[in-house]
Amino acid sequence: MTSVASEPTRRTFETIGVIGLGTMGAGIAEVFARNGFAVVGIELTDEAVERGCGHLTHSTGRAVSRGKMSEADQAEILGRISFATDLSALAEADFVVEAVVESLEVKKDLFRRLDDIVKPETILATNTSSLPVTEIATANTRPGRVVGVHFFNPAPVQNLVEIVRTVVTEPAVLADVEGLVGTLGKNPVICGDKAGFIANTLLFGYLNHAASMFESKYATREDIDAAMRFGCGYPMGPLALLDLIGLDTAYEILDTMYKQGRDRLHAPAPVLRQMVSAGLLGRKSGRGFYTYEREDSPVVV
Ligand code: 3HC
Image (cartoon, rainbow, N blue to C red):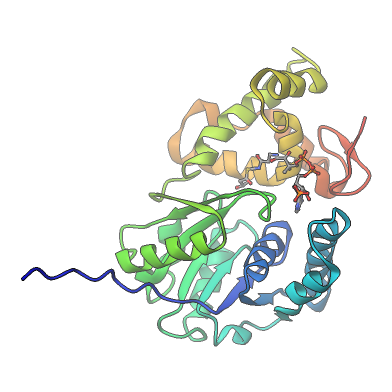
């Protein structure tokens, strides 16, 4: 008689914690709420919670105005998200993802504090773009249940999530997170813990090169962007994409990758540093390589 090996049962997740409700965190909270999960959004202050709510209302409102979502669905989605300024609100969360500032110390401190709050079986994740997931994981007493989950901007639109495993991530945890990402309608890819992971390692050399090309006045910003949009079919040109990502974020990612890999491709173009110092951060500050009326408004040339 032959026996049929049963599939290992995957965990089910109900409540998701999202820490940090900036552009990425709010986008991630929206993705989970759109897919039926109860979401607890955490921010540092009431004002930051207000801003996070603003992102969520604006993003779902855009779908309503495009006829992609009814007002009733919008209300239901937003109704699934509760907010708090205290991490203790995450006591019942099954999965917690942080999308706070890209600082190793801040993230490690957060993971240390989560130890006493979340359930033992809760899976913890960081949305870091380039910081070492292993170091963040080992700030916690259960590093086997910590992974990186790297969403792409805008999170409600981009269908990729990189799942980053460390040398101590438990295989069952990886499988559960892969399943969870699948339920969001996103494509999971799995990679090891190296700054930049798969996509940013490949993308940022290109973006950095475009910034250098602009800096050397080799071509105008419009022509650099047009070349890649119309010549290569990219949805947006590299300078417009840098504005979307945020020049401060882009600089930090490049700097971290360069320090880790010493690949000259990733040595940040000086113009990026200068623009960040001058407060030209891209869409979020109203000006980067282009000027914007609002964060998501069309380019005003
Ligand atoms: N939030 C939510 N939804 C948004 C959005 C936003 N900020 N921006 C656009 N959308 C939605 C629109 O509502 C629309 O949805 P619909 O098809 O359901 O109506 C859809 O996206 C297309 O938007 P638009 O028609 O307004 O504009 P485009 O067709 O020009 O698309 C874009 C805009 C989706 C941003 C597209 O240009 C694009 O995909 N650009 C490339 C983005 C990219 O490469 N992201 C990765 C950056 S790297 C990263 O995030 C890694 C990190 O570590 C830095």
